Amino acid sequence: TGTYETPAALAFRGGSWSEKRAFAATGILVRHPKGNLLIDTGFGRNVERQLTLLPSLQQSPHHLGTPIIDRLAKADADAITAIIPTHAHWDHISGVDDFHGLPVMVNDAGQRFIDSHGEGTEVLNSFHGVTYRTYHFDGGSYLGFPSSHDVYSDGSVVIVPAPGHTPDSVVVFVNLPSGKRYAFVGDLVWQMEGLTRPAEKPWMMRFLIGEDRSEIRTAIARIRAATKLYPQITAVPAHDGRAFSSIAIYPASTR
Ligand SMILES: [Zn+2]
Image (cartoon, rainbow, N blue to C red; front, side):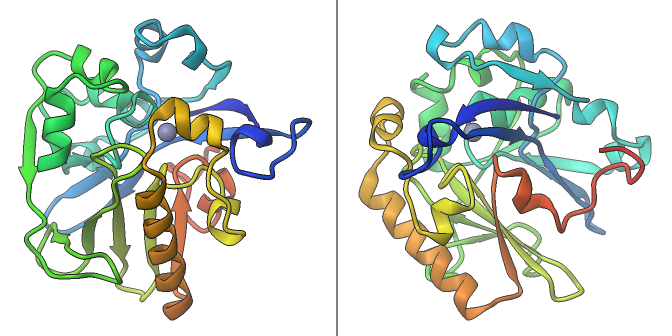
């Protein structure tokens, strides 16, 4: 749905100032017999107006693509039953506004974070009439994470808590019938290097966002362990376009 520009030095520890990284902002459509799901939404139709709600420092130069609502075929759009944000930040929920009435799935910590009008929830809280569907981490441990929520009770889409970037951050595991598996890690790390080196975000960004460093390190270690144990899992940081390379672009004819 678009990109915004960030120097690599601000994307992961050890990144260079001269190298620019185009941060992807997008969403994932999961087709499921019991109802489609959207994991994050990327930029929606009203992103320009939404950006004015943010502190000027956060209003990065960006490039707009096509919002998800304008790309989806009607059948796929009509079959969406819920949106699962990896967390409540603007670049992940901007498009929620375009899917009026569609439930937004949040965990208890997420609901508290949104209701507290904490920093980073300005855009989501500016939307009128959002329907939240609260879920609980009622399942057992999952790939090293202490608890989980199995959305359709069939193991296909499993959400685990991964706070640290924000109190409501989650990792969404999607397990396809083919055996291929994905871990959508949201903003746990911004670029692949965050997991592969591993390299957390630069301290200045962690400080500005108010991240919990030890929670982030724990979750990074869990994802690294899970992908080592199960090489069929691809971990996808929300803003690294390279991480999406094995996922079909929707619709197939566009990029
Ligand atoms: Zn983000």
